[in-house]
Amino acid sequence: MRFSFLVLIFLVLKTSLAHGQSKIPNTVIAFGSCAQQTKPQPILQQIADIKPDFFIYLGDNIYGDTYEVDELKTKYEKLISKPEFQALKQSTKILATWDDHDYGWNDVGRHYPLKKESKEIFLHYFDEPQDSKRRNRDGIYTSYMYDYQGNKLQIILLDTRTFRDNLRPYKGELSENEAYFYTLDYSPHTNGDSTLLGADQWKWLEMELAKPADVRIIASSTQFAIEYNGYESWANFPNEQQRMLKTIQKSGANGVVFISGDVHYAEISKIQLKNSYPIYDFTSSGITSTWHFATPNKNRIEGPVMENHYGKITIDWNKKDPTLTMETIDVTGNQRFEFTIPISQLRR
Image (cartoon, rainbow, N blue to C red; front, side):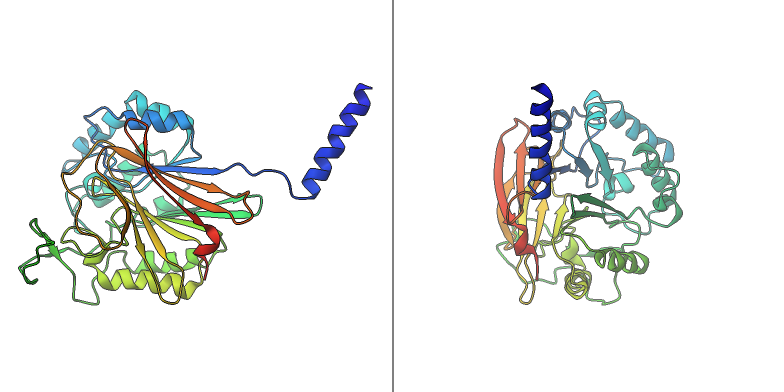
């Protein structure tokens, strides 16, 4: 009797698998940025508790702001010694890129004199394997590919610091605009040769986008899809921003969604393209840092959330039309907004 029952279970499972009814677990990606190493980081414990598949650090993972190698190391030590960081490390796979403060100094780019030393420190503290390609080329850009029963997820981490030209200081080029109720720091580059990613990273990115994938998460430390606001973003390099959009279109890459940090609040921005699917940019910036206002952004469709928070993306592969859901979760554990996209709407 028991043998017959086991045979029946085996046949049911075999039939279910044959008809494609085996359920694929949802893929959960948490991410965040802007974490002051001297402060408690309860959000990391929150993330550890939900055990996502990945946690992506988007930069300002510490506030280094130094020209001293030993000081940079000391500040990383403060981060990794935190119990909440260790809990996160034990519960999920951590992926990381950097922004200005952990790279070296506020708003700095390719001219930072310790960029090679900073890279080695970054790779050490985020446990980068010794045989990693990141160790054998300039910069820290990299990518990962994951397969979920034939559904491919690509995660691309950009490096927006190592190769970036200096920002162009604002010198009153714009006429008075009441939307800008604050002091503008930078103006967009008008020189078409100015670069954010650099030639080698662009060449690499074009090859990455040519790889087959259903969903592509592109991590940029600074916001990609916002309008110009006088602060640091891709809008300060309009030629690079347009090149990215054209590269995505030309490659035929489906499923592109940007995630970004830097600004100390959360929002979703959207660029609607004429001949392609819309590009979304989900910003999560505020593990410990906050800001007292959100800048004007005509591309904003969700947010802003000004309190400490993290971002969460859930991919449900099991629906007839799989979905990607974006959520911002605040420091008290409350969901502050949710936005869902059918993955079919991220195709040309």
